[in-house]
Length: 271
Image (cartoon, rainbow, N blue to C red; front, side):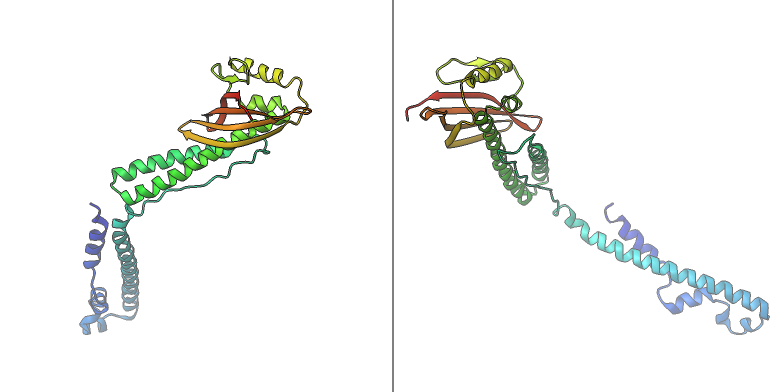
C-alpha cells in the first residue's frame, strides 16, 4: 500500500504517447493524411486546426503536470523509508530564577512538561527498537533531572531569603498548604499543620531584628520524581549575638509544577 501513489502515477504516464511525434500524430490524425486536409474549405479548416491546437496544448499541459507529479512522488517514495529513523523530539532548557526573584517560577512547569514529553518519546523509541534515539532521549532526561535539582535549590534559596528578611508573606507562599507539613525548630518538638507552622515562624521571629545574617554550607540536594530534599549547615547570626550552627533538612514537594517546602528540621550542632 505504501508504494501505491508511485505505481499509479507511473502507469498513468505510461499510457500517454511518449514522444512529441506520436503526440502530434494523435492530435492531428487527418492532417497527417495530406490530401484530406487540402479538401477542407477555409472556415472549416480554421475551426478544425483551432480545435486540434487547443487539444494539443491541453495534452502538453497534462503531460507536464503528470511529469511533475512523477518527480514529486518519486522524491516522497525515496524519502519514506527514512522518516521513521528521523524521528525527533523537542527539548528546551529553562533557566531558574535567582533567589531575589519575586513570584512563582513558571520554568518549573515547563521542566515538568518537558520531562513527561521525553518519557513518552523514550517509550516510543524503545517500542520501535530505535535504540540510538532512546539513548539520546535518556541523556536529555538526565539533563532535565539536573535542572530539577536546580529548581529545588532555587526553592531552598527562596526559603532562606524569607528567613533572613523575616518575610512572613513570602514564607507562607513557599510552604505547601497541607495538614501534613511539619517544622522542627532547634530545641523544640515538631509542629504540624500549615497554620501552626506559620504561627511558629511568627513566634521565632518575634525578638529578631532583620535582616539576619545567614550562611549556608555543605549543601546536598536530591530529587526523585515529585519529591526533593536539601541537607545543609545553617549558620545564623542575629544582632548582638554569636553565630548559631544547625544541621537542617528541607523537604520539598512538587505540586502543579512548582516546588513547595513541606518539612523543615533544624538541630543544633557544635561549631
